[in-house]
Image (cartoon, rainbow, N blue to C red; front, side, top):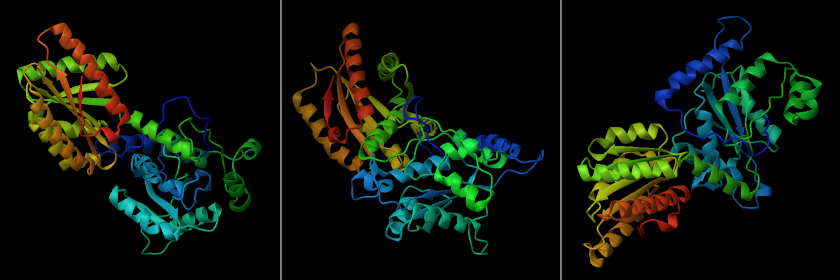
Length: 401
């Protein structure tokens, strides 16, 4: 696939192929893939993908091959695999990796629960590596777990951002279109090799702005920034179903909606948060604010953290939890604040191991409605910064609005 220029529209988020939407997506994609056949009613095309991941990344200037460099503490190639898994109609993915990195790749597949992934040893060049991947797909041995596809997508392991639509365009073009002089003039060496040696049709498909490649060290920071932006698009405010907490929670919700008009803000009662949190996460929510009114303890926050910990939602992305405490500063002694601070620091260290970033926030619960609104706005600014930056250096801190 060819990449377009950087910039433009916001990149697609690498995300899992969710069971709740996979069926609908697969049905829609299947109709497109079936339409690529020569006759009406033809069966859906068998599609596979090959990811050459045997490079050493010399231009990156770091000892770790770029496909294994961490982005938010997770290897870059895992994001690419996850994005491919969103296209539920891709039956097999073959990752071509060097022998010395074979075990590391197996560990990534196991840790992040990637499915339908096969590993093949890389060759001495990129072309040889691609050939090894294609040969594995063409192998007709009885004990092979791979099925022979009709269309194979060759995709760089370090291009984690792309829409499923571009994959469909590539597959459809591979079936429908022939090759032109324009394609060879402006295409890549893969097109030239396909025409020269394989005697098959080829077509240049214009890529989207999202389809850029991580090449230099600065690109890792750009990729991290994109992923942070994508996982900051929804905030869930969790509260105890008490009248005073619901009132404060809904006030905070409205202010956050005003301050962040491009972010979806929702609220849920904590007593049935088990099912609600799961539904929210299916919509890609990785940010929670737990509202605690007139209490310095963290029992409600602990309930939320326990639910998140058991759900294992933090496996793919770091989850932000802000424990927001609305207290009358005239009634809370400094010793109470220090006790809370010591507790959250220790607990935040344990949560950090599970990829959950816990922060504390004290907001003055003024009896003056105008002053309370002002304090809520200050709190909203802090919450927004914590969610956007996901700064692990601030975990366990008790911030004051």
